[in-house]
Image (cartoon, rainbow, N blue to C red; front, side):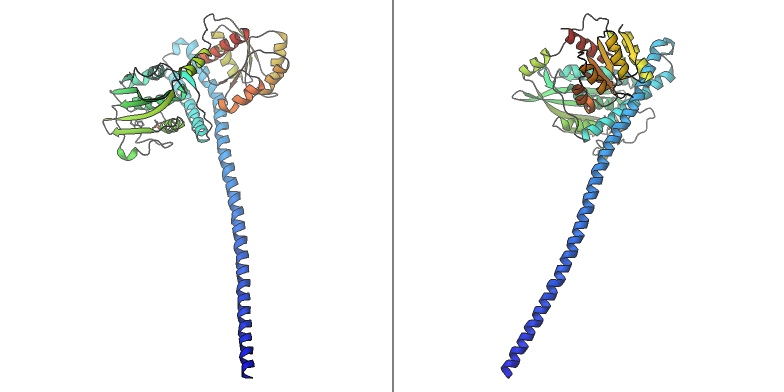
Length: 428
Ligand code: ADP
């Protein structure tokens, strides 16, 4: 009896333990399911948030590029017409109003371009080009084009170029001069009655790579120690006091990003009241076979300027006027049509040497018009004149059969050069 009692008690205890364990398992299971559901819903939320963030970033890029495009088109008109006014009315050459208009339009344009560029670099859309360049030429070009600011602040610009730097190097000269332009124009803006030195020296050579050290040194107001870490940030301007100062605080941020694109880093040293020195080192290829190949591919004969017949396809009346003016200045004959269909009709009626084609047009856009022209077997050079950023449309333009892309507002000489080059190439 006693034994049986013990066994029954043991079984009962065992059963209760089992039940307790079962209960715990059941609770655990419910808890796990709850956690799982919670995690799943959080995951879902995270995914939605991620998609929203990606969408927002895409929208931001699209927004900036659309706004810049929309701003550039009318600015092309403003800059062009201002130039026309000062060309046609010589008596207005000294008008402060006209000069302010010119200045403001240019400033707005450079701001739009800066914004677009920052956006491009941040989106990793800027690809460095490989062209032949001469370091001394680039530096002299920068120094010459800024001579106006230099005289305004009574500054002397000194260039020091190491003679051991090879004459021709391969690299992206436009981006290099953009970096130097920003640094030198800052140096000239923040220095009065002083000196700005632009130095380039051969730091070292590794195989065919030449490491060139660039320095921009001024004797200006300098930057306080506490601000040195901030100046490369976007929209940063330190203690802005001068009224006539122009800038949006984007220059150094662009410089830093461009130098990084070259695989390098920019350094700054400064002492308040004494001056500021920026330096960076960039590697350029000096392989002579590459240099020769690029040089051989540059058409240089622009000597016997001819009178070409140009078909301009453009819907914006102001832009029509500006482009016509540029063409007339080079003695080119122009016919202007408002849309792509009219262009195709004009081409079937009389011969032209070149077509200047806007991209954004009602009825049929520039790409489609070009495709139709090519379908007809016409090989006439077609140059896209557009307010879109170049890398945004280049691929589509060339695929459609266009031969070159120029961004409005462009240097008139660039357009003339492109026309001459393409027409000559076609006739060769
Ligand atoms: P911005 O020139 O439009 O103000 P930047 O990004 O080029 O914008 O420069 C940011 C700030 O760095 C300037 O506002 C100025 O305070 C300071 N800075 C840049 N270069 C110099 C310089 N050479 N000397 C003194 N201060 C400078």
